[in-house]
Every structure is written in C-alpha cells, then in structure tokens.
Length: 156
Image 1 (tube, one colour):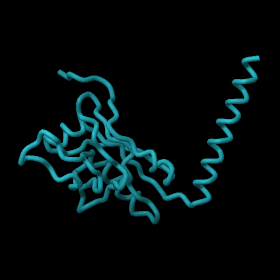
Image 2: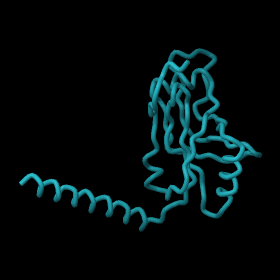
Image 3: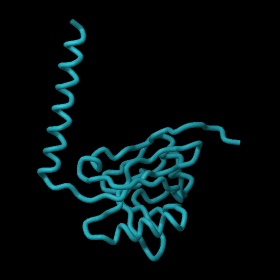
Image 4: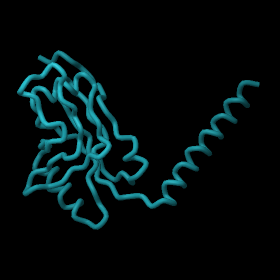
C-alpha cells in the first residue's frame, strides 16, 4: 500500500536543457542509503555537476550532491558518492549503445519521488554549440513577445 501518490520534484537541472540537445529520456530508480532519502525528503539536492557513466555493465550516477542529513549520526553518507541507477537490462543496453557514439553523454534532468520512491530522470544528450544556445534564447524571447502582443491585442 502506497502512502504517497503522484510526483514530488526535489531538484531539477534546468541548465542541462540549456547546454544540451536532449534526445531521449529515461526514468531510473536510485540505490540510496537511509540518510540520503531523508535529505532528499527535506528537499536538499544539487544536480549541477551530475553525470552518469557505465562501469562494467552497470550505470552509475556521479557528481550529484546530496548533503549530509542534519540529524544523522555516524551513519551519515558521503555527499558526492557514486550511486547505482536501477534500470531494466533492455534500457541499459539501449543507453550503452547510444552513449558510445561521439559527442553523446548521459545527464540527470530531475530527482523526484514517484509514489514514495526516489527516481531520477536521465537523458541521452549532445552538447550545444554557443550559437545554438543563443538561437534558443532568441526563439524563446520572440515567442514571449508574440504572446504578449496577442494578449494585449485580445484585451482591447
């Protein structure tokens, strides 16, 4: 019986969507210690320098900062330790084959609780060039201005 329902976002990596072309996303479970879960439930997590990489045939999340739990004792965790991602074998082979291509990387997009279980959304991505980033910002700004103009026109 599940106590919690729905999706509660703990942290999202907005910079990843700016720096990378997102090609494919996957939802993965995370193997965590007890104090890590408590720190996540308190809303403390940073995905800024996070990435995922294969070690053998397993996918590991690295560089994600989950600070120590304040009420934890000697059982506290290391803030930047490697965390194993839990995926089906077919998903792992698909991600592994695509990530071997030149210029591809695996980045975490969000950490959240889904029906009480900690999950991470990871994405296969390729890096954007500087002019791609400027073009994306320009398109977003143009869309915002068009929406404002349409809204002000409809008020009259």
